[in-house]
Image 1 (spheres, rainbow, N blue to C red):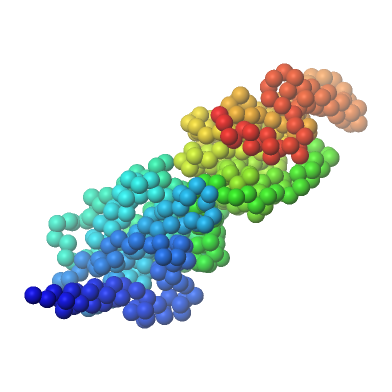
Image 2 (image 1 turned 180 degrees about the horizontal axis):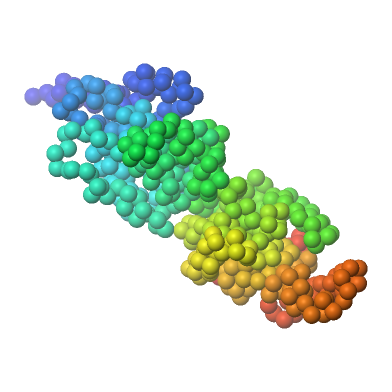
Length: 508
């Protein structure tokens, strides 16, 4: 008996079912997205992954609403139950070690506002399990409105709070790299997934909040437009967004680039002429400079991606490459608070140490700090808890660490930026401009020589004594003296920084 017609019918049925999940069959939804200046979920997916590499899981799922909708509208209006999940490769032509396999979950706002339903959570759990089992880095686009109350087919759940998606997503922490991307509205459960990522990228059009307008109004907290809840600029200032993107295309390009640092080495793009580092710092030791200029010369061409640039500004954190090798960078910015590490900067530096541990990235610290920010205002922000936590975090880092002092290295703050002790890094080096002490020179003179200064009449004579004492302490704290006492390993020609870092990140 021939089975040809049956097979043909089955294939045709499958082809139609697949087609109904794609943009070509969902033109109204596609047009609505484009009218807002946004892309569809599948447009973001195909821009992210390598051509032809996607294997989709759960593509034929629909919302658990068969009791209230007909099958035709379910297939079109609730395609894939609002989230596209699967595996693919990303950056396959870039990464030299061929570790380009990834897991992806792309929320589809055109399906029930990207809300999280019964089968939707099952799809997430399945792809999370695959990512953990196969050690796949994860990229997730999170646009959506949180939990969905309309899945009326579910008869075995009251509130669905036994969902395991959030705990499984959190369970991937430190096991696989996780990059989250958002555009548009992202509330409640979607925001929880976004915020739990290792690196969080959001577009300027994003509004991200742990509750949406309806929940806020229902709680008697007022009526707000979605754009008023967690706008991107507010979240950047609070440190809740790592990288701000112009739009979805830019965010996707950033996601691919950020992911590449977790994937491994690439062929080096080279670096600027290193002799420029010899004259990059100002001659006046009290004059500020932009450490980003140092980073641009020191690391490979166009390899520096800064995270959270407007938060905790006394410290710059970035991903970068040196000779193609990915590294995590923690650098002092003496243009803000003179480089003193305040509470926000301490949190930011600690988060970068944690990311380096999770992604197994060597750390390069570029230090020029007078130490921790002190005073009543700092203590009122919790300095006595937040700043010491840096030592706890650093102690758990098990990747190579190079500490490079560009200029000042004072007190506990300097120690914290190189792992808690100058002996902690694989290499602790200084440029010739380096200066060291238990606290900043100026403060040390005022404190340690208070009686001597007060014994001289106020005015030019006292100022002259003060400057003389500072100069004497500077001579005692020079980098060459610190090296002579073995408090640092070496003083180097700035032009040799790259080769010293390369040596340090290869072994521990």
